[in-house]
Length: 345
Image (cartoon, rainbow, N blue to C red; front, side, top):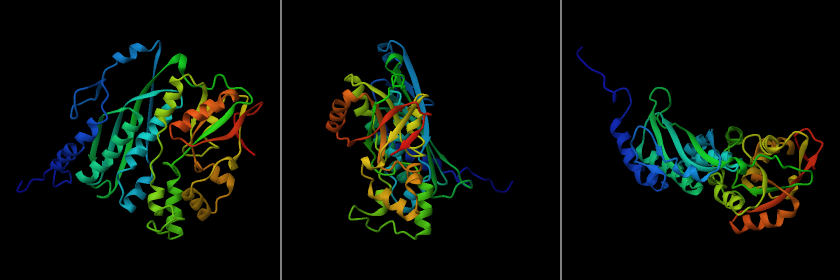
């Protein structure tokens, strides 16, 4: 044939991919734990299992998730250095709910056209999330999808593995009537409900650069990264504080997540007036015209992680988390005789 078609002609830039790997190398290595073997660039991430010997009966716990349409807001606002924290948070906070320590993390970045500088921002956020969670970023993939995704578009997915001793699993087995539900404050909307948020922004013609109640630009508040609760929770468990159950409040809000840590025959009774709602959540709820019930079943409304503890340890648990910098609220209690649901008062 007279001409030939190269990979570059098809829209894939191998040199830009190599530049992206070089740009993220230091950030990735900053997450390494002693168990990590090898370096960036291998065909598989290597992690020594020798440390599992310190567990009597180690249970591996895995989780995978994405950031969802919050990425479209990040692209519209031009801020890409925090969505990686969201990615890690969505995975590690999930496996934390059974008491697992996150060990390692892998990421997947897909984009229409690879931009090494932007990729470095995104992966830098993932590395920051891993440092906050104490887990190692041991592998990942950056894929160009020309003709499938617009050039400036990108998507993220993540996967983590953790471990917990079977005897120390947090699984709600000891729930009892009268147990107290403590809520740890969220940093905002975290990574859920953004399809509604984006619809509200479009329909109400909202300006992402506008100041919201003196708290900062709306776009920045909406992009506040998901809070990672791993270190204070693991420290509480290591100190012997008896946490009976945990729920990561994600998509579906308190209504559709707190019930996941209950046992049959128990209800969670929650008082929505027991904690403050962050301004960006309150603003979006008002702009969308949601009822209180709809808001509780859509957004976290200011609670990112719920803990169930016995009444006699409430003060100790609260003191531990407040000393770790968390805002803690008594948001409800456990009631016997229910249908494994969340009720509001």
